[in-house]
Figure 1 (tube, one colour):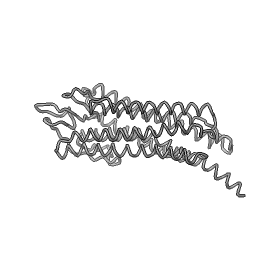
Figure 2 (spheres, one colour):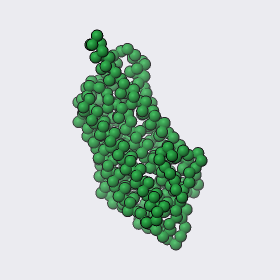
Figure 3 (tube, helix red, strand yellow):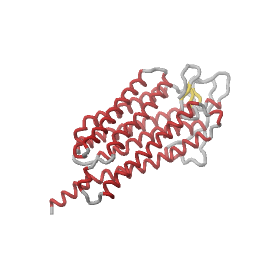
Figure 4 (cartoon, rainbow, N blue to C red):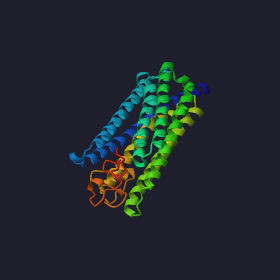
Length: 327
């Protein structure tokens, strides 16, 4: 009787975390889809003559990530059907890798790397320096490569019971992700705070962006570290699947939270069709400061001189006087 209970408990620890992770992944994908809709609304309000090359590139980048997230979630759902529907009652099938080698270590690493490189680009635009953006890019590419190698190794093994052999790769991947997130949060906060002008409304916009960068950085880095802990401390089960399946959605949601906040801030209004409070966004009035270093929407500003650093309506940083091109 006790043996049967132990077997049931072990099966529950193998199946439960993955099922919970899949539910959380779908939940976060729903939030991501709504954020993508809000992002599209923000761009739709921009006239075609203002839809510049950088705006289009970022738009395609965002929607490409969202499509990639949908594909990853579809593969995760296929795994759930493989284990819990097509092979119901077959305990041996629970040890089958199925497509988890592709949708967890490989695709997740590509998503986190893409988001981190985007923010490295933004740091380069704000600072004009290549040192921190270069460091972020190198670490991001390195952990993406280890994630890809880890996925291929799991595919070759073909058994979930042998995942312990990838612990070194998994640890490096997630620790590198956490370190990169911290660097990005600190660098973006430092450079944004340097743009404060002493004008309260403008400084409030900047403070809100800094808060979002710190919050999203803390969330993604914490989940990455938890994934390492779950993978290392509880190797016989799949508790780490909960955090692994959440992490890519958190990265893409963090990216869109930042971009949507900048769009609403630049518009200086709350569109009736946007439920922006769901993301902690409280738009303030648009401020045009022709003689200052920062303007919330440079395309709406008029005055004797152009601002040095601009937060455009697309959620991008641009500059004309300092020679920094906006992305």
